[in-house]
Image 1: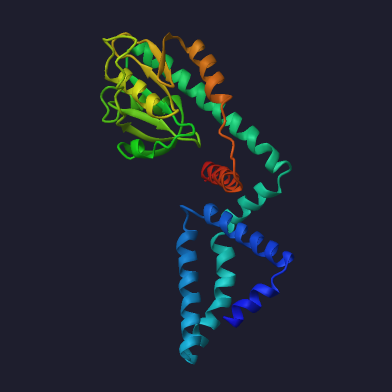
Image 2: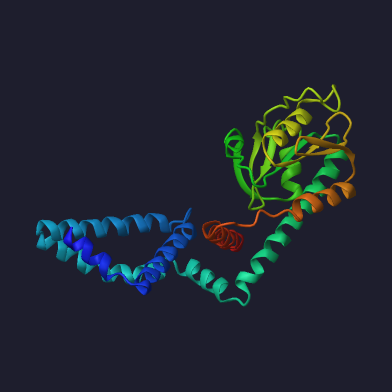
Length: 285
């Protein structure tokens, strides 16, 4: 108890700021290495540290000496093993306007997604192939993503056309594009609309699903009719039918490209920056 009181009394504003900065760096690092082989290495390091602590507490001198002599080897091997990832991360951090360009990068990525969706929708319409594409915004769609086949692929018209080709196993369902501008899943199951005031009583399952997901979330959904080839879009429980590729691009640019859920907390902002780094790393590899 006395030791705790001494620590609290010894803390200064500078020390608190120093601790917060270190904690923030480790927090950002945790997002940066997520999904990479560095996670396994970090777990190994934590195990080694735990062994050292236990060995010191129990007075196991031989084990403690063995672990301590192994640490210099790790100091040399880590930069060698992870040299490509370290180089790319440092290059990105060293670029001028890194923080200012993050917004521009995301805007450009969203515009690319819109172009690919419009191109795919136009071809699906011409071929009379049904399609159902969901664009995630603020609301979480994880429960619907889990119902489909995970992809985590880039958004291209070729991939979307392949997904909705009638003879594939993935065409009967929705392709969900997450907030990072990647196809998170295909053949996902969406809730059907529960509204009694449907714009058309003869709406098929795809259109009812497009309305349904827009009623329970803020997602935008593009649906292509298999019977008529008509393109429609849903947002906020409303449907805009009979669109062509040009009008679809205009509407998506207005409600999706311009709409940005900007981070409201430092944690959300930091996660966005780290996700951008990870996305670029995957593209380069």
